[in-house]
Image 1 (spheres, rainbow, N blue to C red):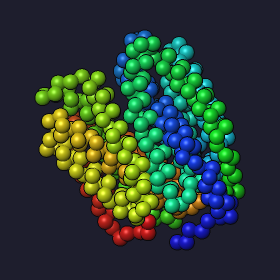
Image 2 (image 1 turned 30 degrees about the horizontal axis):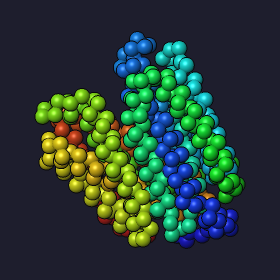
Image 3 (image 1 turned 30 degrees about the vertical axis):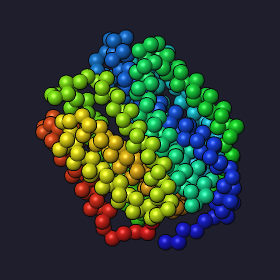
Image 4 (image 1 turned 90 degrees about the horizontal axis):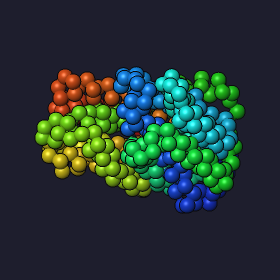
Length: 401
């Protein structure tokens, strides 16, 4: 179909100077800090369990509700970016997250902490509003590069959040970590208020109209459907590995504790840092070709896990390839989908990221089941099977980039 650009979009893209290199770096940091809020509590659950005298199962509900809140935010908050001024929406999201973090930090019981965890997840979607806004401001020839830089920031925030949280929690306690995070959100809101330009909505639909348009948008855009399926399958593979890694490392020949599993997050940063490179490749060549290459890297990572996972260097190389494959697929997918509808980029983000998140959740379930039934070999086999399905989808009749 013809992807016409509205007059307001043409005007926005003519203001490419508003998206300078320093501003892109600021936005990358903002994406990372916003996404990190979803993961600060995870390494602190044992400490919280002792303070409140609750079981790991009860705390598991708290952690799950954070992710559930994020899914709700993707569906009901991010889509507002097509009908609301985006800078104001981003600032509101950051301030709401800061308030929820403070209230969580003073929780007298598990119930209040659980409710605030849900609110933290619901409000911590600023990164998914920033990314479509940045693609609107970026020059079309540099869109992949910009997305890659933002994804590098976001992924580093996710991967490093657990490490930072564990360190601060050990020194000052879990409440201090949440309070520090709240201060960072307020400071970030001030910075973005100063550096972000205002953006005008590009559609006059009502909020209910926006939500009703999502199924039609998915039906009308085959590229969005394909990218969503490939992204979901790639993130499912990512979750299959990370949800079972700590169990694998506890078995011979490793016999390591959870601290070593946490350090593998630092190994994953190497793959995250390559996201910007993938973005440049997607700009220079057909981004769909980049997706095919990254899916092959993902397949190779699980083959290495299966054949050499019992050897630490093999496991480390596999982790780097896994993160490079998953993040590269994410960047190339987003480069493709953000060329589709300039007036619907927030809704496109809602559809893509919601599907992506569902894939990750299903991957966690599959990984846990595979580990219980078949051990490490089963985990690797499931990963290979999902990548094979992704490649089968990819090799179907191709769509335009």
